[in-house]
Length: 497
Ligand SMILES: Cc1cc2nc3c(=O)[nH]c(=O)nc-3n(C[C@H](O)[C@H](O)[C@H](O)COP(=O)(O)O)c2cc1C
Ligand code: SF4
Image (cartoon, rainbow, N blue to C red; front, top):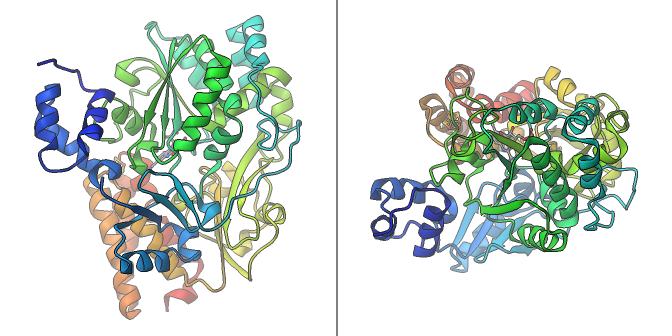
């Protein structure tokens, strides 16, 4: 029997054999030599493997809930369709979002919007995408150190959520003694409210791939992995077409995620790429030292890499100067109660009011917004003029995260909206840390009990539970998972009486 070392081939074998169906783990164990219990653990961890027979997946995230997702779910069930209510499909601009059995989008809510073509924008979603790749040529002319200097001068912060300075990671990988190095693209976009990476890959695949090629060349990596949401099949096709056109001198491998939000966390993503359950690692060591298969690894979000070609072409100072309160432009996603949900590339630091103007105005009277996906909680409209940037939102007790802005109008009961967030985190905790695993469940139970009889006593302990989760969690999910409920209680006391 041929033994395999684990890794991506294990996931493919599980997929081909039918996911978490009875007998699959035993059969794949026989083929691969991986213990049956490990394979069972892997196949039940990932939604797309654990539930292979689903005919229709309907998103129950905030924007989809506002757009009638629960009614669609009830109707499909009544019609005998095998329907699954899922956490997020990365399509809040098309709410209510749904995928068919082949994981192709079912469009009920129309397509999202982007700005018209503008060559002054670094990513320019409306622009023409070509295989020219002149920035890579320039990078090779000026040399890796000069490229990293431009990234530093640009002030480019990671666009995946944490906002970490990109140049520090590039220098970190480049300076390792180990010469086998990897670059990994985090294309697992799964934060409710966020769908910008999807648009970059669909509309500007060359931008991202050229950025990836520049990064790999600068840090000395010969192999790059693109870890892409399994639900983003159209994006994968666009990237494959662009690669075939550009034929880069870089080995690019794809890996389809299997429906676990936590795999967006970079070390969970690495575990998943290695064929395991996607559970975040303790840090240090950081991926720049010991990442994929223990080798130095540069991990970046799609948008971060898509900024790189323009920075190399036009210089770091130019990019920095595009921002208002911090460096550069930013892809803001906006959905919920606005006229034209979509992805808008604007100076970092614009306010909600300005963003909503681009999005055609509010639908109804605005009451609340969530500036950075579920993890950022809710803010009242008193913050409508706060710059949407990393520092200002942190000072407001929220976060920019991946800039997935969701607007809620005054028809929404914030206790109900808080519940949608808590359901999300209860579904998506990886379960590794007891405070997060138990706490996510307790917070959801507390809000459910409150909604049942509106007795505030049920919410008396949510602050204490949050404290335990914040202290005892390995990753950001557990630290922020209580924010939908806590922020709703803090800013909208009128909905909790
Ligand atoms: C729970 C959780 C989920 C995350 N999901 C994503 C994601 O979907 N996409 C992403 O790029 N980064 C995500 N991140 C951030 C990554 O861990 C990491 O910071 C990022 O991929 C680094 O790339 P950047 O420096 O270009 O932002 C997530 C982090 C946490 C804690
Ligand atoms: S905090 Fe939660 S999601 Fe993160 S590692 Fe711990 S259990 Fe998993």
